[in-house]
Image 1 (tube, helix red, strand yellow):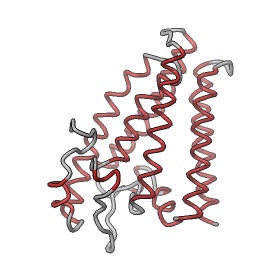
Image 2 (tube, rainbow, N blue to C red):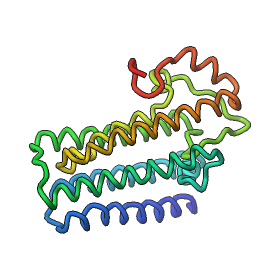
Image 3 (cartoon, one colour):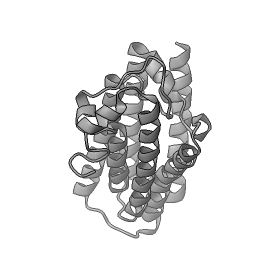
Length: 224
């Protein structure tokens, strides 16, 4: 119960910052794309927190240790901070686009953006159910075993694949083409995180080297 309460408070704070990053730069609450996007994000966050809190509180605790302060590897401290800034940059640039009318995104692409965002978040939630050791920071527990089934049988880092899908979807969901300029920076950061994470896992997690020889795609299935 304590873990679920802490996770709820953390989610409320994160969602409040997200709302601020959306509506303040937009200069208005008359922003229907942002309301739909925010509603989806809130809904899935609540579902995940309740489900994980009831079924796997240990996994929920691992996911709560998010942020550069929880990373022990210098590269990861920089990358995690960069990913957080890139995500909020997606929101702010898209909201500024709404304010100044830099681009005009058809409703069909807004729908596509929401679908990508929903799917990316859903993938992240599925990953937690398939790998209870999927922490928010790079760490290897003594009893941890390599997971090679489910989504991990398709790509080595399904969590980051879902996050990258969400990065592409967010600007479109918010009715902005200009927000997409942030996506390449996010992709670079995920790539740097993966290289350093795989180095750590190969050194510390028994069987991981053999897993990489079986599953070749790191981030995008069949591409890289």
